[in-house]
Length: 527
Ligand code: F6P
Image 1 (cartoon, rainbow, N blue to C red):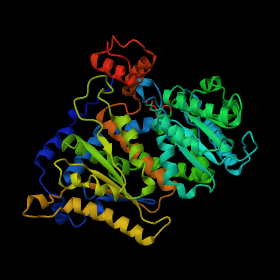
Image 2: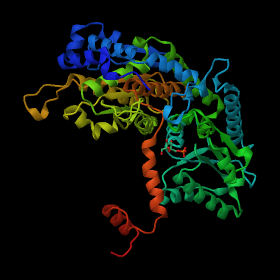
Image 3: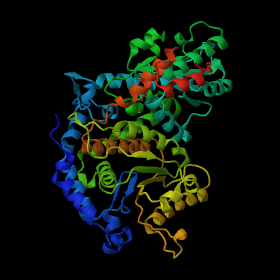
Image 4: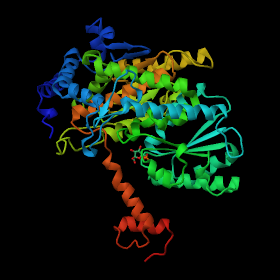
């Protein structure tokens, strides 16, 4: 039973008062304090965070840090890294950080050191990835694989897809990675049409190995392989790899033992890209870059674990979010990368944040009385400027924005890269400063908050740091809100109902709306 109640802390009460009293605009904060930019920015290796354009005074920021100290945050950070079972509703440890742990020494879970297993699986994954890349791991026709199809959904899709896209400049020429997630048959058919079965390998990626979308897509893919290659059990060949925390189920599916890579129940699906779930990433960018990806995340882990809250990037970003959502009434938060290679980052973060913190039950088993996880949304700039920025500038809601960009261009025109970056900086300034016009339609109120996160360049290491930064930010917010960020019971009911409906021929005992929708989609006659 948790003894901590956020609203009962002194800091929460002080912040409530401050939120009512604070009137200063962002521009005034800068006028009043020549050092604001310095004080409200952090540099960590190749990351630079400018959080000076937040609607926060020194007093509010120090109140937020007081709240972080009054909450059991320090203890929970230590407990997570140590492998305590902080995922209370599933009685599980939360140890995705162990997958990228760089320092030697045992990590005990239920009395057993888990590090040897982690190293073994990482080694197996890297060696499989390298042998696929080199062509040593061959198809049944003796050819090297040219196309890798990851079949998975949610955490078994979004992370690998986002990272492979973000790091596409490091992809081995001649090797293509594809991602099949939706159960939409038209998508599957369109992809399969483009592929040659002789040189295509499928990765069936599912923590549980029971997710029906994934299994159905896998079945279609296996049927296609069987028909195209004229073989019986394609899942038993090199054309099929399984990645799962339920190896027995994959074995029953017929996948060869050597082609099953495992991970563990203490790795949450949305935190699993660091495990064997990252195989498609490792195939795409190679073992060396994959290790850099892990190392980048490990750097952020160490920063998060050992840095005082006032200089701790994930903690500061989290507490600023708490300020907006719990004290200033913001309902959503936008992530806008000015980098087309990060096009899937908002969707990845959407699952990471909303599946982690979209909860209303407290750790103590009561209904939360405060606002928890925000709606997270976004897309790349400059595209977003021509879509939803109107609302950011002149709408009635406050939407805190995270702008993200890489300083160095990777390829393409240096001039275009400058145009991209200047657009982002202009937007963040325009949101803050606004512009007066006597014509209300042309008036920009300004005072709209944003963070700017600059990566020196977008590579495996900086991307690792960036993802770990958001993972920890989300964890901190979960602790402040006194919720369990690591379960996802909310998604179960819909799955159960869909399974029922698929099995069910009698619609009569459904509610009238559901019954009619079923009747229409099954094209059944009216009763
Ligand atoms: O439906 C939600 C969810 O359970 C996610 O948490 C998970 O990432 C996804 O489904 C896929 O699950 P699995 O990897 O077990 O197929």
